[in-house]
Image (tube, rainbow, N blue to C red; front, top):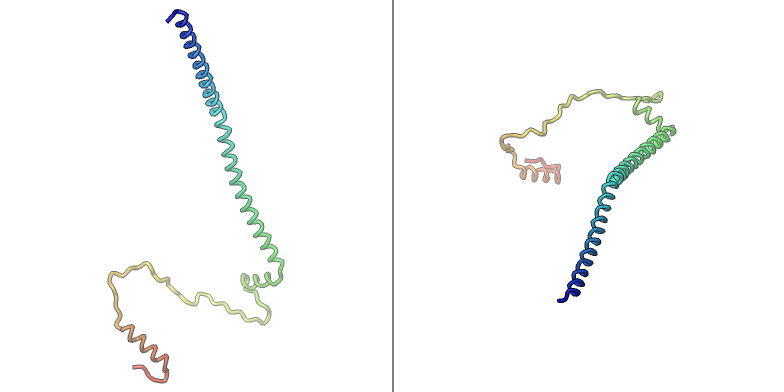
Length: 149
């Protein structure tokens, strides 16, 4: 190859390398700008998401408060009805009309709660054959005039 041809190849090779360095340099600059943008925008975006979550929570609280208010207004409207007030006075305060007889039963049975969680250690059997008892009961129900055995 001649010197001029070598010079031309070398020149084109240097031009190619320069173009690639410029291109890769612009790519690196673009990546650096993108990273700086992500770092700078991370906190505001995070704050925005937190605010959106808080707004959703507050919306739920407002909906619950509105439901409570509607319930209270309905209750207040019920108390304007004379029949409701009368029923509440009879039930809660035990009011009666003159001539009415009111009975109040206080603690008439001393019932002890059964222990349902108690487990027996042995299997219990009955002395009566339940099939025979069932047949006798059915026969007696069909003909109550006759005495059972």
